[in-house]
Image (cartoon, rainbow, N blue to C red; front, side):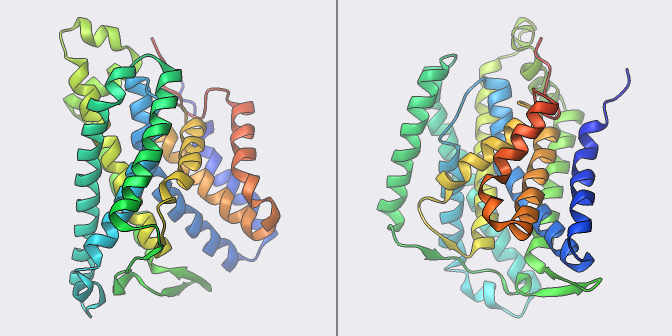
Length: 323
């Protein structure tokens, strides 16, 4: 069967369309900024696309795990300020690694509790899922306020990741390069896990045909729980990366990212990790290009991008076929 490569060309085509409207140095800066933003969006959205694909759950509380990861970054990097500001790249990266690990573990455990207490009761009922998860998002936001307060908090960026360097005449932020590397590593790990391992095979099979997996004797409920934990942990990692990038967070950080996350999932195709990866980069690039060329249109650029993709491919770039 001939492989459809058209979706894979969407990212380079968008980048090439933008090139004639700006100088090369500006294009390089915006392209890397868009790629970095896309990688962080991918971390937040990849878990959600698997959760919906396998579990058929519309989780509008996904942003709560992003918020938790962001605030864990503050709680971990604050006490490790000596490592964050040290004149040692190893200590700087160890501090960021500790924040990423804490964000993943805490968000994953929160996801376990959320699935058991709230989501499990509304499987198969989309309207109830929307209502109860929106309510869960509100409650989670108020819990964050109760623990960390309502005032904006500063997030320390490791010294080695501050500043920028010049590449082909373009100014490139060091942290954005790090975000691209982290995103690629996690995407690679997910790709290998889903395509080269037994558990990945079961997850993919469950996305495409849940009844067949159950008929073969596998406990799909355990897959549900594992995927929900992994998706929540990835959201926490994305929250940590986004918080360090922004350097200032508020309790609304997760809620504000939820719309972008859903746009990425819809563009990529429900249940598709590679589609989510492509969709996230497209959203990141479009946001940066339009923000530079026509700032007044930046707010609606992502909606316009989603509409354009759905007119071209109504089920998203790389949707997973349901049996």
